[in-house]
Each structure stands twice: as C-alpha cells, then as structure tokens.
Length: 259
Ligand SMILES: Cc1cc2nc3c(=O)[nH]c(=O)nc-3n(C[C@H](O)[C@H](O)[C@H](O)COP(=O)(O)OP(=O)(O)OC[C@H]3O[C@@H](n4cnc5c(N)ncnc54)[C@H](O)[C@@H]3O)c2cc1C
Ligand code: FES
Image 1 (cartoon, protein in one colour):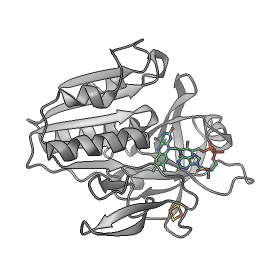
Image 2 (cartoon, rainbow, N blue to C red; image 1 turned 135 degrees about the vertical axis):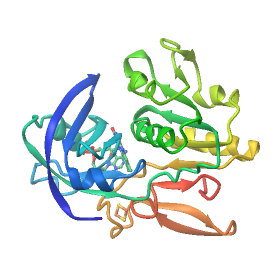
Image 3 (spheres, rainbow, N blue to C red; image 1 turned 180 degrees about the horizontal axis):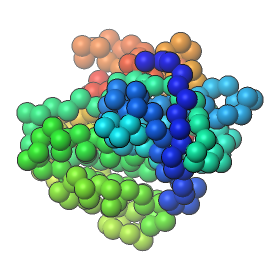
Image 4 (cartoon, helix red, strand yellow; image 1 turned 120 degrees about the horizontal axis):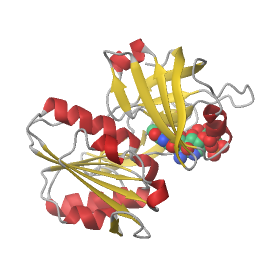
C-alpha cells in the first residue's frame, strides 16, 4: 500500500538518549499493519523529499494507533523528533512484507540488537496472540545500560527476556547470539545490525531451525522503484538474484540471504 496519509501524532516523547517513542492515530493503517512492516515517514521539511523508513513497533488495530520507536541519527529523524503531539505527519504504508508467524511451533526465539529491537515487540505480541501457549524467549543486545529500550514492554508477551550489553553495564556482558546459543527453540526471528543477523543465520543453520530476519538496508523511495535497497538472495538455493528490501522484504528467510 503506497498511499500517503496524514496521521495525527498523539505522543512523541524521549525514552532514552536520542531515542523517541512516537504514537500516531491512523486507523486505516493500523487495521492493515502486520509485525515487521514499516512506515515511510515524511519529515515536514520540504528540502528532504524522501520518506524515512521506520519500523512499526506496536499495532493497536482496535484503537487505531501505531507506535514507532526511533533514534535521531540525521536531519530527517531530528525533524520528526521535533514534531509535537496534536500535529499531523505524512506517512506512507504500511510498507513491505513482515514476519510470517508459523503457529505449528511452540518454542520461539526473538533476537534483536539496538534499533532493530522495536519491530520485534509487535512480533512478540502477534506470536502470543496466534500461539497462546507458546514459549517466547527474547534476546536483546544493546551498547550499554543507557541504550536499553522496551524491556518492560516485552514483559507483556515474553516468557523470558535476556538483555546483553557490550560493556556489561546491564544484563549479561557480551554478545546476544552467544546468549541465544543456550536456548532451546524451534524457530528464530531477528532484526538488528548485519553482523548480528549473519551470526544468527549461521547459528540457526547449524541448529537446523528456520530463521526469518528483517534487514534494514539503506532506502530511498521505500516503494520499489529506485533499487537503492538491493539485497542478494539465493533463489531455490542456487542462483543469486537481487531483491528489494523495501517491497520484497524487509523480512527474508535467513537461509536465502547471501551474507
Ligand atoms: C525497514 C527499515 C526499518 C527501520 N526501522 C527503524 C526503527 O524502527 N527505528 C530506528 O531508529 N531506525 C530504523 N531504521 C533506520 C532509519 O530508517 C534511519 O535511521 C533513518 O532513515 C535516518 O534518517 P535521517 O534523515 O535521520 O538520517 P540521514 O543519514 O540524514 O538519512 C539520509 C538518507 O539515508 C537514509 N538512511 C539513513 N540511514 C538509514 C538506515 N539505517 N536505513 C535506511 N535508510 C537510511 C534515509 O532514509 C535518508 O533518505 C529502519 C530502516 C529500515 C530500512
Ligand atoms: S528503497 Fe527504492 S527500491 Fe527499495
């Protein structure tokens, strides 16, 4: 869906250093959204023509709300952080293909790093809804204690939450993939930095469990026309082809991605 909509901002507050929690009222988009999809958010600054791709963190379809958690990294996200509740912003979406939930499984691992964590919250909520008796183990990696986000929110859906920090200032000291290695799961979902996703894909391959990852490639148009977001993917396990993260993804079968 690539129609531009005006969504009402109901909250846009800082939750950690440079990290903001944006809630928008957009009933049509909330009704259509699925976990792992993203929005193209326009900045309101005419000099920045392109929408910024930001994942949908939580979906409240009955209430008509969508939640996005984002970090200020450049001019576009700085503009978005300056928008006040009560105002409107232009959004495109929901965009892309989200996570498919396989309800034949019972033991789920969700593995996220940094600003790859927000879309996994909506995924955890959807798994809980689709498989009420699921065991959901969540492994989240951050730089340090100050960068930890959404820990309490995951508590609403997860059976266990393992937080890892690079400097050991919160949770387990070290790598989120090492922490996940101790887990006993039948399917894994991930979102985060490319090296983390590659390591998750390798581990899932060795353990012979299915794994779906959301790749956050640099994007421009967000709707499939500019080819800025090409991802190399193996087709039928052999030929390597380019797929577009914005409309063929951003979620891919981890075994098919050429890391
Ligand atoms: C599918 C997807 C989901 C994302 N979800 C989130 C999220 O939930 N929270 C969050 O904090 N960040 C997320 N990102 C990263 C976010 O899109 C960038 O941080 C943001 O676009 C930066 O824009 P800027 O104008 O502030 O920075 P600038 O660096 O000035 O951006 C310049 C241009 O490059 C593009 N760009 C820059 N960095 C990225 C990036 N990492 N990925 C894609 N395009 C980029 C911008 O869209 C813009 O067109 C996501 C990226 C993708 C592709
Ligand atoms: S961002 Fe333009 S084709 Fe994907």
